[in-house]
Amino acid sequence: MKDLKHTYQPKKGFQNGLSDLLSGKVLEKGLFELLPFSLYICLLIVFYINNSYLAEGYVRTISSLERELKDLRSEYITTKSLLMFQSKQTEVQSLVASQGLQQSDSQPFIIHAN
Image 1: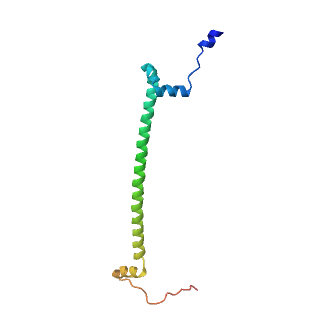
Image 2: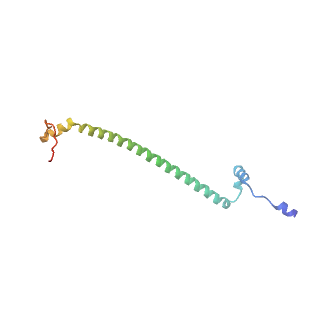
């Protein structure tokens, strides 16, 4: 029983693994033992870079759409004010005068059908 007690070594915890990483003991292991971990870290780095590029692209798209929305809003306001100006009674009279139409001088009346 004493032999079993002395040969048992508990597994390393998170803090021991972290201290091994920071102290450099991880580099004492063989290359093939570190290969999966290295590939995992490289994959995470590639994913992080790709994610940042996508986020920058979204920000650029949003800013260009905001600029376009501002331009379209100003165009809408300009067109609406021009339409309101042209729909005034005096403007309509001046536009249809070239076609020979003019405003009636008599009052409108109701026709009763009896």
